[in-house]
Length: 199
Image (cartoon, rainbow, N blue to C red; front, side, top):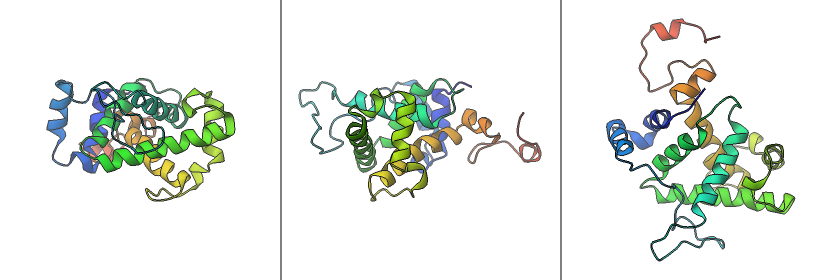
């Protein structure tokens, strides 16, 4: 199944970010306002922050997005395609005009990289899929409660894993993967609730 930018917009429309803004988001995408990288300069004050002050793109921004995509590669079903455009669009929508949320995501991604480097001497995005999964397992991300103010695993769960899973399963395409033909916030009518999951 192929995820699209429209799937990302549908997921954004189901979140609190897009209350009353579905039409605006659609227009923004058509005008290219959701092109770019969600983790550009000014998001974090960490030691590795080197946001460019001369108008050039932050060299770390694409690395952060690559780390987010590397997590998606672990937590998303293998049969899903179009993940990069989907995740980029969703993350841009979630972080637009929300600097605190963007900073939380950046810090959680940095924490994930720090753990990967301490165990495997490489950034999370540079590890193979099996090793990336083992890093998440070693952090016990799947067993911890999401908490934006918590320890590293709790913040990774809140800002990274839960964000990605929410985006996937509130989109029309992602919802079909688990038999949710009519995810919350999407029209469908009573008939959609009487049918079983698609085979």
